[in-house]
Image (tube, rainbow, N blue to C red; front, side, top):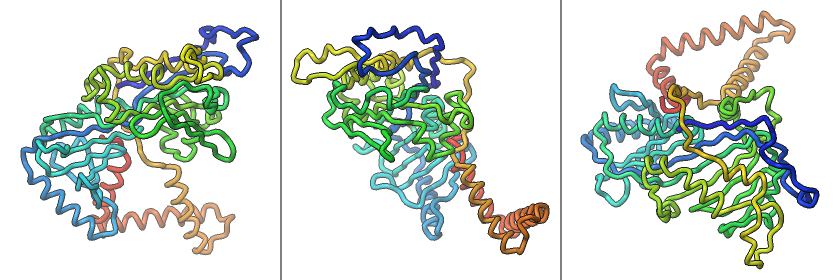
Length: 400
Protein backbone atom coordinates (compact mmCIF):
# COMPACT_ATOMS: atom_id res chain seq x y z
CA UNK A 1 0.00 0.00 0.00
CA UNK A 2 1.31 3.40 -0.91
CA UNK A 3 2.16 5.75 1.91
CA UNK A 4 -0.08 8.77 1.73
CA UNK A 5 0.89 12.35 2.47
CA UNK A 6 -1.73 15.02 3.14
CA UNK A 7 -0.64 18.64 3.10
CA UNK A 8 -2.58 21.81 3.88
CA UNK A 9 -0.76 25.13 4.10
CA UNK A 10 -3.87 27.32 4.34
CA UNK A 11 -4.29 26.77 8.11
CA UNK A 12 -8.01 27.56 7.83
CA UNK A 13 -9.78 24.27 8.23
CA UNK A 14 -9.77 24.29 12.04
CA UNK A 15 -11.75 27.31 13.33
CA UNK A 16 -10.41 29.47 16.11
CA UNK A 17 -11.75 28.65 19.55
CA UNK A 18 -13.72 31.18 21.51
CA UNK A 19 -12.03 32.70 24.61
CA UNK A 20 -14.03 30.39 26.87
CA UNK A 21 -12.84 27.33 24.97
CA UNK A 22 -9.12 28.03 24.75
CA UNK A 23 -8.26 27.25 28.36
CA UNK A 24 -6.04 24.15 28.31
CA UNK A 25 -6.88 23.25 24.72
CA UNK A 26 -4.63 21.45 22.30
CA UNK A 27 -2.43 24.03 20.56
CA UNK A 28 -2.72 23.24 16.84
CA UNK A 29 -2.92 26.40 14.76
CA UNK A 30 -3.31 24.61 11.42
CA UNK A 31 -3.69 21.06 10.11
CA UNK A 32 -0.33 19.30 10.13
CA UNK A 33 1.16 17.28 7.32
CA UNK A 34 0.09 13.69 7.93
CA UNK A 35 1.84 10.55 6.66
CA UNK A 36 0.15 7.19 7.17
CA UNK A 37 1.03 3.54 6.65
CA UNK A 38 1.48 0.14 8.24
CA UNK A 39 4.35 -0.13 10.70
CA UNK A 40 4.30 -3.87 11.43
CA UNK A 41 2.57 -6.78 9.70
CA UNK A 42 2.79 -10.43 10.80
CA UNK A 43 1.08 -13.21 8.83
CA UNK A 44 0.80 -16.89 9.76
CA UNK A 45 0.49 -19.34 6.86
CA UNK A 46 -0.45 -22.99 6.47
CA UNK A 47 1.60 -24.09 3.46
CA UNK A 48 1.37 -27.21 1.35
CA UNK A 49 4.97 -28.23 0.65
CA UNK A 50 5.71 -29.95 -2.62
CA UNK A 51 9.37 -30.83 -1.98
CA UNK A 52 10.57 -31.40 1.59
CA UNK A 53 14.20 -31.73 0.48
CA UNK A 54 14.56 -27.98 1.01
CA UNK A 55 14.50 -28.67 4.76
CA UNK A 56 17.48 -31.01 4.41
CA UNK A 57 19.37 -28.13 2.85
CA UNK A 58 18.20 -25.74 5.58
CA UNK A 59 19.21 -28.20 8.29
CA UNK A 60 22.65 -28.72 6.77
CA UNK A 61 23.32 -24.97 6.42
CA UNK A 62 22.04 -24.27 9.94
CA UNK A 63 24.41 -26.87 11.40
CA UNK A 64 27.21 -25.42 9.29
CA UNK A 65 26.72 -21.90 10.69
CA UNK A 66 26.37 -23.27 14.24
CA UNK A 67 29.86 -24.73 13.91
CA UNK A 68 31.19 -21.19 13.47
CA UNK A 69 30.94 -17.97 15.47
CA UNK A 70 28.79 -16.36 12.78
CA UNK A 71 25.20 -15.34 13.53
CA UNK A 72 23.91 -16.21 10.04
CA UNK A 73 24.85 -17.47 6.60
CA UNK A 74 23.59 -16.50 3.15
CA UNK A 75 21.07 -19.05 1.91
CA UNK A 76 19.78 -19.60 -1.62
CA UNK A 77 16.67 -21.66 -2.34
CA UNK A 78 17.59 -21.90 -6.01
CA UNK A 79 17.96 -19.75 -9.11
CA UNK A 80 14.76 -17.68 -8.76
CA UNK A 81 16.19 -15.42 -6.07
CA UNK A 82 14.18 -12.23 -6.08
CA UNK A 83 14.38 -12.41 -2.27
CA UNK A 84 17.83 -13.06 -0.82
CA UNK A 85 18.02 -14.53 2.64
CA UNK A 86 20.34 -15.02 5.58
CA UNK A 87 19.66 -18.19 7.56
CA UNK A 88 20.00 -17.51 11.31
CA UNK A 89 21.97 -19.88 13.52
CA UNK A 90 19.00 -20.29 15.89
CA UNK A 91 15.29 -20.74 15.30
CA UNK A 92 12.27 -20.27 17.57
CA UNK A 93 10.12 -22.69 19.56
CA UNK A 94 7.67 -23.28 16.69
CA UNK A 95 9.91 -22.49 13.71
CA UNK A 96 13.37 -24.12 13.57
CA UNK A 97 14.42 -22.12 10.51
CA UNK A 98 14.49 -18.31 10.59
CA UNK A 99 15.55 -16.47 7.45
CA UNK A 100 15.95 -12.70 7.16
CA UNK A 101 16.15 -10.36 4.21
CA UNK A 102 16.52 -6.75 5.29
CA UNK A 103 13.79 -6.29 7.90
CA UNK A 104 11.63 -9.13 6.53
CA UNK A 105 11.67 -12.41 8.46
CA UNK A 106 10.56 -15.77 7.03
CA UNK A 107 10.01 -18.46 9.66
CA UNK A 108 9.61 -22.05 8.44
CA UNK A 109 8.83 -25.46 9.89
CA UNK A 110 8.61 -28.86 8.21
CA UNK A 111 5.17 -29.48 9.79
CA UNK A 112 2.41 -30.56 7.42
CA UNK A 113 0.18 -27.84 6.00
CA UNK A 114 -2.93 -29.35 7.62
CA UNK A 115 -1.43 -29.10 11.12
CA UNK A 116 -3.29 -26.96 13.67
CA UNK A 117 -0.12 -24.86 14.06
CA UNK A 118 0.97 -22.83 10.99
CA UNK A 119 4.19 -24.01 9.38
CA UNK A 120 5.19 -20.57 8.14
CA UNK A 121 5.20 -17.04 9.51
CA UNK A 122 6.17 -13.83 7.71
CA UNK A 123 7.07 -10.69 9.65
CA UNK A 124 7.50 -7.28 8.04
CA UNK A 125 9.41 -4.58 9.91
CA UNK A 126 8.73 -0.85 9.83
CA UNK A 127 10.73 -0.02 6.69
CA UNK A 128 9.28 -2.74 4.47
CA UNK A 129 5.82 -2.05 5.95
CA UNK A 130 6.04 1.58 4.82
CA UNK A 131 7.35 0.55 1.40
CA UNK A 132 4.10 -0.90 -0.06
CA UNK A 133 3.97 -3.99 2.13
CA UNK A 134 0.96 -5.44 0.29
CA UNK A 135 2.85 -5.53 -3.00
CA UNK A 136 5.95 -6.98 -1.33
CA UNK A 137 3.78 -9.68 0.25
CA UNK A 138 2.23 -10.61 -3.11
CA UNK A 139 5.70 -10.90 -4.60
CA UNK A 140 6.84 -13.04 -1.66
CA UNK A 141 3.91 -15.43 -2.15
CA UNK A 142 4.73 -15.69 -5.87
CA UNK A 143 8.35 -16.42 -4.97
CA UNK A 144 7.31 -19.13 -2.48
CA UNK A 145 5.08 -20.67 -5.16
CA UNK A 146 8.13 -21.00 -7.43
CA UNK A 147 9.64 -23.38 -4.87
CA UNK A 148 6.53 -25.51 -4.36
CA UNK A 149 5.00 -23.73 -1.33
CA UNK A 150 1.23 -23.27 -1.79
CA UNK A 151 -0.92 -21.32 0.66
CA UNK A 152 -3.73 -23.41 2.21
CA UNK A 153 -4.72 -20.89 4.87
CA UNK A 154 -3.68 -17.34 5.70
CA UNK A 155 -4.19 -15.61 9.06
CA UNK A 156 -3.04 -12.13 10.11
CA UNK A 157 -1.35 -12.40 13.51
CA UNK A 158 -0.63 -8.72 14.08
CA UNK A 159 -0.91 -5.39 12.32
CA UNK A 160 0.16 -1.94 13.51
CA UNK A 161 -1.41 1.10 11.80
CA UNK A 162 0.56 4.34 12.05
CA UNK A 163 0.01 8.03 11.47
CA UNK A 164 2.87 10.55 11.63
CA UNK A 165 1.89 14.16 12.34
CA UNK A 166 4.66 16.43 11.12
CA UNK A 167 5.02 19.74 12.93
CA UNK A 168 3.03 18.59 15.98
CA UNK A 169 4.85 18.46 19.32
CA UNK A 170 3.76 15.78 21.78
CA UNK A 171 4.00 18.44 24.51
CA UNK A 172 1.21 20.52 22.93
CA UNK A 173 -1.58 17.95 22.61
CA UNK A 174 -2.21 16.88 26.25
CA UNK A 175 -1.90 13.15 25.59
CA UNK A 176 -0.24 12.61 28.99
CA UNK A 177 -3.35 13.87 30.83
CA UNK A 178 -5.21 10.73 31.82
CA UNK A 179 -8.43 12.65 32.43
CA UNK A 180 -8.54 13.71 28.78
CA UNK A 181 -8.99 10.13 27.52
CA UNK A 182 -12.20 8.22 26.92
CA UNK A 183 -11.04 4.68 26.30
CA UNK A 184 -11.80 1.00 26.72
CA UNK A 185 -8.20 0.36 27.69
CA UNK A 186 -7.56 -0.54 31.31
CA UNK A 187 -3.89 0.46 31.38
CA UNK A 188 -2.36 3.90 30.88
CA UNK A 189 1.40 4.53 30.91
CA UNK A 190 3.38 7.74 30.45
CA UNK A 191 7.07 7.73 29.45
CA UNK A 192 9.73 10.34 30.12
CA UNK A 193 13.40 10.67 29.22
CA UNK A 194 15.55 13.23 31.03
CA UNK A 195 12.28 14.50 32.50
CA UNK A 196 10.94 15.24 29.00
CA UNK A 197 7.73 13.60 27.81
CA UNK A 198 8.49 11.06 25.08
CA UNK A 199 5.26 9.10 24.79
CA UNK A 200 2.21 7.40 26.25
CA UNK A 201 0.62 3.99 25.90
CA UNK A 202 -2.99 2.90 26.29
CA UNK A 203 -3.75 -0.80 26.65
CA UNK A 204 -1.33 -3.67 26.22
CA UNK A 205 -1.02 -6.93 24.32
CA UNK A 206 -4.06 -7.68 22.17
CA UNK A 207 -4.79 -4.02 21.46
CA UNK A 208 -2.79 -0.93 22.28
CA UNK A 209 -2.33 2.71 21.34
CA UNK A 210 1.11 4.28 21.36
CA UNK A 211 1.67 8.01 20.89
CA UNK A 212 5.29 9.08 20.98
CA UNK A 213 7.90 11.53 19.75
CA UNK A 214 9.09 9.89 16.55
CA UNK A 215 11.91 12.39 16.00
CA UNK A 216 13.47 11.47 19.36
CA UNK A 217 13.19 7.76 18.57
CA UNK A 218 14.92 8.20 15.21
CA UNK A 219 17.89 9.99 16.78
CA UNK A 220 18.87 6.57 18.14
CA UNK A 221 18.67 4.88 14.73
CA UNK A 222 20.21 6.86 11.88
CA UNK A 223 19.48 4.40 9.07
CA UNK A 224 15.77 4.47 9.93
CA UNK A 225 15.99 8.25 10.24
CA UNK A 226 17.22 8.53 6.66
CA UNK A 227 14.34 6.39 5.42
CA UNK A 228 11.59 8.18 7.32
CA UNK A 229 12.80 11.72 6.65
CA UNK A 230 12.85 10.85 2.96
CA UNK A 231 9.34 9.42 3.34
CA UNK A 232 8.17 12.66 4.96
CA UNK A 233 9.81 14.80 2.26
CA UNK A 234 12.05 16.36 4.89
CA UNK A 235 15.80 16.85 5.12
CA UNK A 236 17.49 15.02 7.96
CA UNK A 237 20.04 17.85 8.13
CA UNK A 238 17.79 20.90 7.77
CA UNK A 239 14.55 19.64 9.33
CA UNK A 240 15.84 17.56 12.24
CA UNK A 241 14.30 19.92 14.82
CA UNK A 242 10.78 19.70 13.38
CA UNK A 243 8.59 17.81 15.89
CA UNK A 244 7.03 14.56 14.67
CA UNK A 245 4.30 12.87 16.71
CA UNK A 246 3.51 9.22 15.87
CA UNK A 247 0.06 7.75 16.60
CA UNK A 248 0.11 3.95 16.33
CA UNK A 249 -2.63 1.38 16.95
CA UNK A 250 -1.61 -2.24 17.49
CA UNK A 251 -4.05 -5.09 16.73
CA UNK A 252 -3.25 -8.71 17.54
CA UNK A 253 -5.12 -11.84 16.52
CA UNK A 254 -7.26 -12.01 19.68
CA UNK A 255 -8.84 -8.67 18.75
CA UNK A 256 -8.90 -9.02 14.97
CA UNK A 257 -11.06 -12.15 15.09
CA UNK A 258 -13.70 -10.32 17.14
CA UNK A 259 -14.64 -7.83 14.42
CA UNK A 260 -17.87 -8.34 12.49
CA UNK A 261 -16.02 -7.40 9.30
CA UNK A 262 -13.46 -9.97 8.13
CA UNK A 263 -9.80 -9.10 8.71
CA UNK A 264 -8.32 -12.58 8.51
CA UNK A 265 -6.38 -12.33 5.25
CA UNK A 266 -4.18 -9.63 3.77
CA UNK A 267 -6.79 -8.85 1.10
CA UNK A 268 -9.45 -8.40 3.78
CA UNK A 269 -7.13 -6.18 5.79
CA UNK A 270 -6.41 -4.05 2.75
CA UNK A 271 -10.13 -3.68 2.07
CA UNK A 272 -11.23 -2.98 5.65
CA UNK A 273 -8.24 -1.09 7.02
CA UNK A 274 -10.17 2.18 7.35
CA UNK A 275 -12.84 0.46 9.45
CA UNK A 276 -10.14 -0.72 11.86
CA UNK A 277 -8.74 2.79 12.16
CA UNK A 278 -12.16 4.36 12.67
CA UNK A 279 -13.06 1.86 15.39
CA UNK A 280 -9.74 2.39 17.15
CA UNK A 281 -9.80 6.20 16.99
CA UNK A 282 -13.53 6.69 17.69
CA UNK A 283 -14.77 3.76 19.78
CA UNK A 284 -11.72 2.30 21.51
CA UNK A 285 -9.81 5.48 22.42
CA UNK A 286 -10.54 9.18 22.05
CA UNK A 287 -8.68 12.28 23.25
CA UNK A 288 -11.10 14.98 24.40
CA UNK A 289 -10.88 18.74 24.38
CA UNK A 290 -11.09 19.03 28.16
CA UNK A 291 -11.09 16.89 31.29
CA UNK A 292 -13.92 14.37 31.60
CA UNK A 293 -15.74 13.09 34.66
CA UNK A 294 -15.98 9.32 34.15
CA UNK A 295 -18.64 9.03 36.85
CA UNK A 296 -20.88 11.20 34.69
CA UNK A 297 -22.78 8.99 32.23
CA UNK A 298 -22.71 11.80 29.67
CA UNK A 299 -18.92 11.94 29.45
CA UNK A 300 -19.09 10.10 26.11
CA UNK A 301 -20.53 13.28 24.61
CA UNK A 302 -17.33 15.23 25.32
CA UNK A 303 -15.91 16.76 22.18
CA UNK A 304 -12.73 15.33 20.68
CA UNK A 305 -9.67 17.58 20.70
CA UNK A 306 -8.66 19.33 17.43
CA UNK A 307 -5.65 17.03 17.22
CA UNK A 308 -7.77 13.91 17.64
CA UNK A 309 -10.24 15.08 15.00
CA UNK A 310 -7.32 15.06 12.57
CA UNK A 311 -6.46 11.50 13.63
CA UNK A 312 -10.08 10.41 13.16
CA UNK A 313 -10.16 11.90 9.66
CA UNK A 314 -7.25 9.79 8.40
CA UNK A 315 -8.06 7.68 5.32
CA UNK A 316 -5.80 4.82 4.25
CA UNK A 317 -7.55 3.60 1.11
CA UNK A 318 -6.99 6.59 -1.16
CA UNK A 319 -6.33 5.96 -4.88
CA UNK A 320 -2.69 5.01 -5.32
CA UNK A 321 -0.38 6.33 -8.00
CA UNK A 322 -0.22 4.06 -11.08
CA UNK A 323 3.50 4.63 -11.55
CA UNK A 324 4.69 3.92 -8.00
CA UNK A 325 7.73 1.67 -7.61
CA UNK A 326 9.15 -0.36 -4.77
CA UNK A 327 12.30 1.24 -3.45
CA UNK A 328 15.50 -0.60 -2.70
CA UNK A 329 16.02 0.69 0.83
CA UNK A 330 19.28 0.33 2.74
CA UNK A 331 18.77 -1.24 6.18
CA UNK A 332 22.17 -0.40 7.62
CA UNK A 333 23.47 2.53 9.63
CA UNK A 334 26.06 3.61 7.07
CA UNK A 335 27.20 6.65 9.03
CA UNK A 336 27.83 4.57 12.13
CA UNK A 337 29.75 1.97 10.11
CA UNK A 338 31.93 4.65 8.49
CA UNK A 339 32.56 6.23 11.89
CA UNK A 340 33.72 2.86 13.23
CA UNK A 341 35.96 2.27 10.20
CA UNK A 342 37.49 5.74 10.53
CA UNK A 343 38.18 5.16 14.24
CA UNK A 344 39.96 1.87 13.53
CA UNK A 345 42.05 3.40 10.74
CA UNK A 346 42.94 6.32 13.00
CA UNK A 347 44.49 3.86 15.45
CA UNK A 348 46.45 2.24 12.63
CA UNK A 349 47.93 5.48 11.24
CA UNK A 350 48.75 6.67 14.76
CA UNK A 351 50.56 3.40 15.45
CA UNK A 352 52.42 3.85 12.15
CA UNK A 353 54.06 6.97 13.63
CA UNK A 354 52.44 9.69 11.51
CA UNK A 355 52.45 13.29 12.64
CA UNK A 356 48.86 14.65 12.84
CA UNK A 357 49.89 17.47 10.48
CA UNK A 358 51.02 14.94 7.84
CA UNK A 359 47.73 15.15 5.93
CA UNK A 360 48.81 13.59 2.64
CA UNK A 361 50.95 10.96 4.33
CA UNK A 362 47.98 9.82 6.46
CA UNK A 363 45.73 9.64 3.39
CA UNK A 364 48.32 7.62 1.48
CA UNK A 365 48.71 5.14 4.36
CA UNK A 366 44.95 4.73 4.72
CA UNK A 367 44.53 4.14 0.98
CA UNK A 368 47.38 1.60 0.96
CA UNK A 369 46.00 -0.29 3.97
CA UNK A 370 42.44 -0.50 2.62
CA UNK A 371 43.58 -1.44 -0.88
CA UNK A 372 46.09 -4.04 0.32
CA UNK A 373 43.90 -5.67 2.95
CA UNK A 374 40.84 -5.91 0.71
CA UNK A 375 42.90 -7.11 -2.25
CA UNK A 376 44.45 -9.92 -0.19
CA UNK A 377 41.14 -10.87 1.39
CA UNK A 378 39.34 -10.97 -1.97
CA UNK A 379 42.04 -12.97 -3.75
CA UNK A 380 43.69 -15.20 -1.12
CA UNK A 381 40.48 -15.94 0.83
CA UNK A 382 37.88 -15.55 -1.88
CA UNK A 383 35.51 -18.24 -0.58
CA UNK A 384 35.40 -16.62 2.87
CA UNK A 385 35.05 -13.15 1.34
CA UNK A 386 32.22 -14.36 -0.94
CA UNK A 387 30.24 -15.85 1.96
CA UNK A 388 30.70 -12.83 4.21
CA UNK A 389 29.90 -10.36 1.44
CA UNK A 390 26.63 -12.14 0.59
CA UNK A 391 25.57 -12.13 4.25
CA UNK A 392 26.26 -8.37 4.50
CA UNK A 393 24.46 -7.75 1.20
CA UNK A 394 21.34 -9.62 2.34
CA UNK A 395 21.32 -7.67 5.60
CA UNK A 396 21.52 -4.33 3.81
CA UNK A 397 18.40 -4.35 1.68
CA UNK A 398 14.70 -4.84 2.30
CA UNK A 399 13.72 -8.03 0.57
CA UNK A 400 14.95 -7.31 -2.91
